[in-house]
Image 1: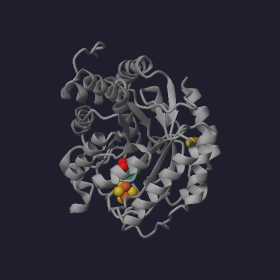
Image 2: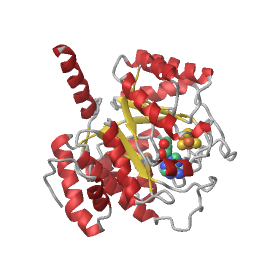
Image 3: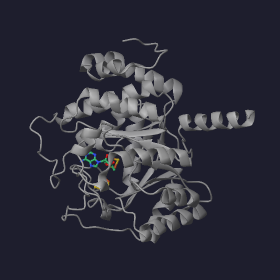
Image 4: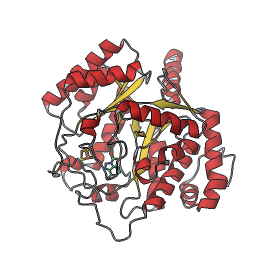
Length: 366
Ligand code: 5AD
Ligand code: SF4
Ligand code: FES
């Protein structure tokens, strides 16, 4: 493997890295990714306290346990007071960042509620918390309102950057348009959000060329943050058991780790999350991702009583735990790979900060 890439990796090179066997990955790819991480973003892991504040969703993604047509989920909206208490928990424990995630909805009531919650959290936390939203596709106006109310980061996974595959895992209707999703990502960037995206790995019919193209998609979009994890079947969804030749779970985990490692080499200074789904396959899945390039973790700070009803996929970890238990557990896991937690630090994407300062330099020159 070339160790000194002065020119960007080509699609073919990426495919070949993703096809490395365990020995080559462990001896060549993973150590290089670890070194790149150390040199570019260091061994600090940033916490984003995850608040799964509502599981209502008007979408019907074929892979997700929260899809509209899954009637076996008890739907909930966490009351405002409890959400504010979670944000307080994050602040008091020095997490410095939270992620507010929900199913997708765009009714006026929801939009306004999120806006008010943002304003309330900003007011109460006196600038000590950065807020990321993960509430799906919205209009430019809504994204602008939420930005004005205090959200500065947004996560919207592309799920797969290959149009055909995207359509295979979503219903064929205008509520699930690939083009709209790409547009939303570009819009979020234009509006000034620190923007994150990601894909699922090991989807039915997905090959290494598709995954390599996903990594190139992140690079072409010049994205600031990425969260990607293995696809895991959920029994109450159409994608469960739909494909005879699915990769075994352990292979999906291995492929996900190679994706993280290659991405770290390709985009040295972005933030990469160690996705929770990794831990659904192996108890040490998330720390393995930290060891090969990831630098962000999202401890779940949703109270235990709601967690069972936010099952995007089977075997989701931490459904029997409360926020403080996850914190202690993650502290041990992170220490086990020699990383430290950036308590009290916002941990903005370095890539984002550099883009902003380049833009400002240009403006000054004009
Ligand atoms: N397996 C893995 N990840 C999933 N997600 C939803 N369903 C699944 C699944 N079955 C992920 C999607 C979504 C994020 C919130 O959860 O990538 O963007
Ligand atoms: Fe809704 Fe998101 Fe699940 Fe799709 S992936 S059904 S938008 S919660
Ligand atoms: Fe939740 Fe380990 S991270 S229990």
